[in-house]
Length: 177
Image (cartoon, rainbow, N blue to C red; front, side, top):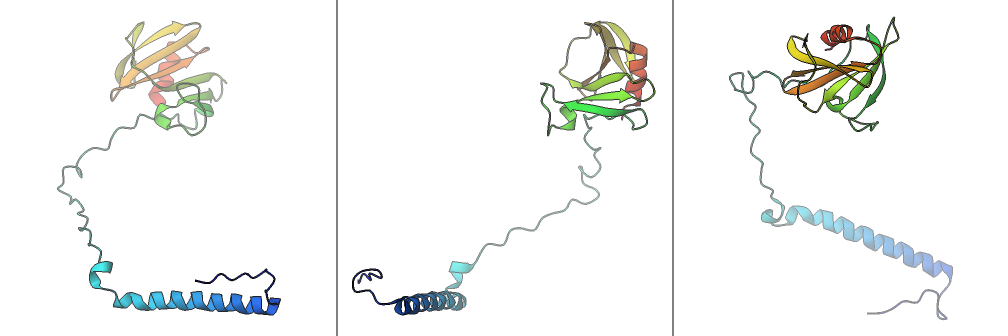
């Protein structure tokens, strides 16, 4: 093994250095070309990969093909009823949050009232009973906030407002999609 000192006292001029760099580049290219040229001659067991099994696509008679789609826990207000002011998570976070867990605040067109709705953790029914979206719900007032809650597909929803009464909140909830 030899050590080549390019900058030492016995170093040659810059022309020799360029020649050495060109030689090393050509040698690296030749090695690379030789490697790729030898690949077809390697033993087959080195390069064989197992073929994955084919993907089976269920036919129309599958159990899953006839199942109803999973219900969505996300509610949305029709665009003609109001404009979304803000979306927040249950703990007040903003940004990229799932629609299913978002609490949406909407300003109603015409009246300017602000309404908040979204899914909430299940709670015991307290207050007056009301029919909301074809299911039984309940309404109550907490610190000046009128709240209507109901359960659909095992998800409890809430709609609330400081300015609207329970009857108007039920009307708005019935229009949610």
